[in-house]
Structure formats: structure tokens, C-alpha cells
Image 1 (cartoon, rainbow, N blue to C red):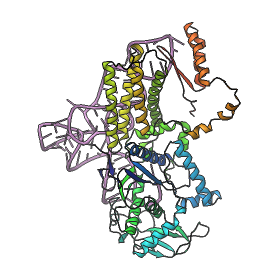
Image 2 (cartoon, chains in turn blue, green):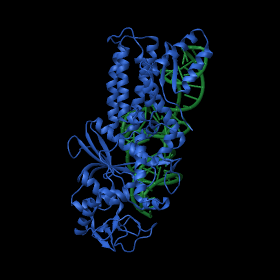
Image 3 (tube, rainbow, N blue to C red):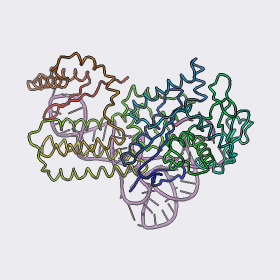
Image 4 (cartoon, rainbow, N blue to C red):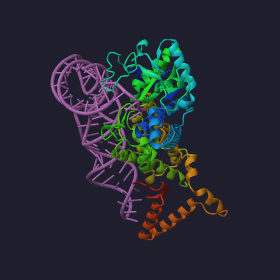
Length: 502
RNA sequence: GGCGGCGUGGCCAAGUGGUAAGGCAAAGGUCUGCAAAACCUUGAUCACCGGUUCGAAUCCGGUCGCCGCCUCCA
């Protein structure tokens, strides 16, 4: 069974057959950089991050383009408010976006072009559309004529007659059809502007994505993704422009759209004023908790990002981390005899590992069913925990081998979903340890050794039933972010980081 | 008005023709000086009504309820 994906265009799950064998080209709608991104944006980028990781896991060479919309009404408005230039605003939030993405552990795209740097390509396209009669000029504005493009509405499944343009927004009288949209907007005084054959102006919103995707990926690329709110009009317009301009179709092979984020049952949106910023929740929850929450629901369904849901996701994540912690400390324990001889139970368990991986893949192959895939991972966790529990009573010589295999599989599957990734280099740079370390004399004991020493003291205390001392050590270490668990055969510990909640 | 989606145990959420994954919460038990973790055990007939079928949460029709899009938005 190969990979299948739900294509918004056909409203069906389709087998994925990339344009070029073994390669997948994808374009993910990037941010308009006029503000910090909210969790709705965050979800979209997490969804496509997972899709991308899974494609790579399947062996595809993935090439990913993501734009920055750095010229736009909202950016201009923001600049006015803050007394800055639109460019300053754009660069600032561009940087903030990159920080948020890194914090969420989203893989950076291969190319992230800016709209303002793609203007020549856009002018070229607009010119071409004019020449072919798909567009017209009015007072320095250029509009796309939707009536000239027969396929208009095919993505959002609606016809021009069905749409009630002007019902909620006043229609520009100069347009030939109410649904016509701007390719180029003439500049008002004080706005950023570029020279064009139609006078000074700036691009309309939709044209940039067409220009960039055609430039970097070419006609008929594989995956175009974004939130469901982009289906109409943004992606519909992109199709119209691109197919009209090139005279070819399709513009995109597979359209993938993720569902919305709700906050307490309501759609999160700017007008409702219930925006939650990515950087706000990352102050309260680890990035993997946010990722876990998105993974536990299918990408096309709505998700509630309320505090209850996040708490729950965090506890689910802890179950995963606890299992890994238990495996790691089990494997770190010095063992006297290791032998490959497996018990019947161990033969069955290690055989089942293949099964887990197969079921994981089946789930992901079916339109990236991460909720199902997480279910498989949690079943694996249960098996591994049960096995470790057995080992406490009845150690077996092959245990390190089996536990090692289990650990490798668990980590492998989690990382396909972007969970439990090793900390990034950038993060380590943030730790203020660097300088101090230089000053330490050679041979200064590592922190790990000192922790071990404390735990030896604690073990001694426990043996003498001096529980006050033992508990004191445990709680003080806990305050420093070191978690200590007592097991039947000894203690295990791990640096889990300081808990900074609220 | 048009188009689309949803309604599964206390909560979240997979499943879309063969008698319901998983997570969180809860209860009891095991382990344990305490704590934490973990393990074992316990619970849903799938909004409602009717139909198709040997058999439906899963297909068809209807009813009720919720939501989204048609406007900038991930």
C-alpha cells in the first residue's frame, strides 16, 4: 500500500504519484509578516512539517518553498501605527516568525523568497495575462477577469452565479465582474511602490504565490498546502492566474488543506479577538506538547487549543517521555551478562516491532492519519513499559538488546512526527555555560558525576532509613530540574529541565 | 440564499459494511518508607427515526443540533 492523500481539488483520497519519480515539490503558504503568528498559523506549519518529514521517511527527496508576504495592506497599516517603515515592520516579524518556527521545531524550507524580491516575475506574469486577454487595466490597477477563465471556482466547488459577491463587502464599481481580483494595485501616496507599465504600484496578494511557485517549482508541481481558509479566494485565484498564464493545467497536482483552530469551541480569528500567539503558549507548554495536540487530531479536522486540551496533550507527551526515560536508564545500567538468547516472550516482542512499524506506516500512508499513528506509538509504549516492568522481577540476558531495539524504534517513529527531537544547536548556544566552562580547571568533575555522588549518598541514607535526608536530596535535585525515581533495584535520574509554568 | 463539514464512553479522538484504536480523567489492585513512574483490572452499540443488507457507527432517506466557507485570515 502506497501513500494516499486527500486532494481538495477532487475531494477524494488519491494515490500520490509525484511529477518526478522519487521527488516531491511542495509549496506552503507562508506568513504575512505584520504580527507574531498565532496558533492557527502554527498548526498549519506543524501539519506540513509532519507531512514533509513523512515524505522524507518514505524516501522522497522533498523540495519545499515557503514565501514571505512582506508587502501588503496590513503591513502598511501596522507601519503607520508604529511610526515605522513597512520594510522595518516586515523584517521584524519575519525574524519573529523564524524564531517561532525554530521554537516549534519546524524544519526550515529549502527556499523562502520574499514577495518584494519577486516583483519582476510578477510583472512578467501580469503582462502575460494582459496580453492573453485575461486581465484589464483601470486607472493604474490591473484586475484579473474571472469570467475569462472557464475553470474559475473548480477548487472551491462553486460557480460565479453561486457566489454572492458584494453581499458583505462593497464591490469596486470599476470591476467588470464583482469577483474580479487585483493583480496590481496603484500606489497611494506614502505607500511602498514599484515601477510598472501601468504606473507606480504594488502587487495584489494572490499573484506573488503564483509567481514564486512557478519560478521555483514550475508548472504542475506536487503539493500546495495551507489552511482551509485559503481555498477561497486565495488558492482559487492562484489557479486561475497560473493556468491562464501558462495555458497548461494542472497548476498543482495535490491540494492539501488543514482544518482550523478553535479556542473554546469558537473559530480563532482576528475579528473575534480570541487570538493566541505561538510565543504565548510556548511560554507555558513545551513545543512537543503543542505538536502532540496537533498530532492527536486528523489534520483536516478542527482542533480546540484551549488550556484543557493543551494540558492533556502535555500529559500524553509525558507518557512518551517517561517511557524513553525508563528505557534510557535501563540501558545505561551496567549489566553483568548480555547474551542474545531470547525467551519466547522476547522473540514475540521483537517480532512485534516490525508489526508496529508497519501499522504506523499504514496509518500515515492513509492521508497522514497522525492520530492513528500516535495510537500505534502508544501501544508500543505500553508494550515496552510492560517489558521493563517484567525485567524488574525477572531479568533476562537479552534484555539490553531487546530494550535497545525498542528504544530505537520508539524514537524513530516519534521523530518522523517531529517529536522528541534532539535539542538544536541553537538552543545549546543559549545556555550560559560556555564561558564558565573554560575557567574550570582540567579534570573538574562533570555535573553527571556529582549527581551520581549525591544519589550514592541518598542511597546510603535510605539504607539507614534516614528518609528525611533522602527526601531532601530528591526534592532539592527536583528543584534544579533533575528528576529522581526510586525503582526496585535502585534509583534512576534525568535532567528534565526546570518546570516553568505560569 | 448557495456550498461544505460535523454529532463515537466523563472529556479529547481514530475507525466509514463484519459486533468499537489511542490519549486524558476516574475507580480498584500490584509495587513502594514516602513520592513519581509503571503494570493489571473496570466502562461506550456510536444524536434520533426509518430503509438497504445475512450483517451498519460505517450505505440511502428524513429529523434535530453544532460549525465552517461564500470578505482579510493558517
